[in-house]
Length: 134
Image (cartoon, rainbow, N blue to C red; front, top):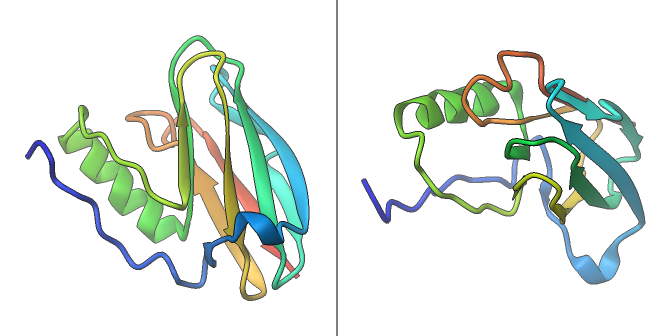
């Protein structure tokens, strides 16, 4: 299935890709081999565009993927079946050990939005977090 492009409607309850020129604020986040995000609970306001500045402090690759828990679990199951699958979407950033990266996301409506590391085994080990949109 090499070259398969992942297509998904990311304009959902989770929000949508943000415009980098309209960022309201930046939130720093780190990922590490204890299978945790720091911070793992992030408060934002509905309508805010957030730049997540993410650092992988671990010794193995990690990623941050924003979506509903259902979407994340479905994507994680696909990653288990196709572990070599390379993909890049507006709602995610994948980082090698020691690497830094970012992602810009607009939270369009109030509610809870999940994020997780979908590298096989990581979400199952507790590598999840929540954005609380007020």
